[in-house]
Image (cartoon, rainbow, N blue to C red):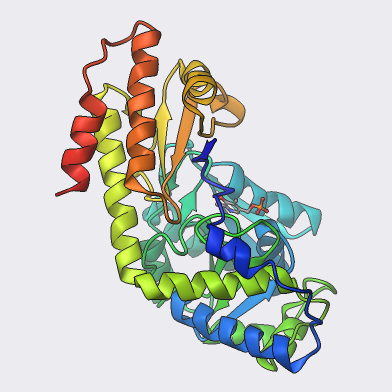
Length: 367
Ligand SMILES: *Cc1c(COP(=O)(O)O)cnc(C)c1O
């Protein structure tokens, strides 16, 4: 079965093999050497002075950023399940927060964010997704971050980049914390989250720290010495090192370019079939299509063509399907998938099959 869901993504064979060695003890020079190399590679990928590895899924890093980087009041951008989650984390900690809510296809408005922070002096942290995976939506994070810093440089800008880090080059000059997770663009099994930190965020954490397991102050201290506060996710970190070396060998820029090409070509092919791309500002990480037949199309793909794509959630549960572009997706895998979608549309009596999807995809991908 071809796994083309926007997380989890398939783990390449050489990375699975890299993780198949004997168990290493985490308090040994051998593991510390691996940890140190992984840290350096992560700093290069993130383009930030510090990156922490946490043994948790992506949500653990989201929670750590809420508790460690926001002292008085949060501003949360909610245009989907993941934006909503930041608000729920605030609620769980009785932390005051203001939410700017958008339809799942609509990007946050920089003007509204600025108005909100101008009206409320107590806001000291902003939480936003780079790609809101619920609808495959790209928020204008860089623009928001830059405007916020012009007005209130002390506000912490926390960007959830779980479906953006490794997908595209992210300008971190105005971002204080950049979150990622193992099972999306980093093509690893789930269980590891990452937080890139700016020098401002480092200072805030050094002078603060909150909680026990997800205390970034104790992690920062330990990880700078190439170890972790608690048992490290050794196998995942060994896999991460191998993956980052692989990505570096391909070239980060080349990987971003190829992801963009795949993403753009897929969207063009889908549009050529008369399908509707859901978000107003689509992210590169995935192609999200709004369609009343989404569940039928997904079922045909799974049962007849051995392709697993994702559906939607909540109010778009039965009207959305999402195709992954994160990681090392081969053009021939997308080509097969798009052809299968065209065949499914024919089977549903929507459109006679004439090879349009592949004609357009091939034209766009070889440009
Ligand atoms: C997957 C994802 C997360 C993390 O979810 P976990 O299930 O905790 O790994 C966070 N943000 C976004 C945008 C995601 O797509």
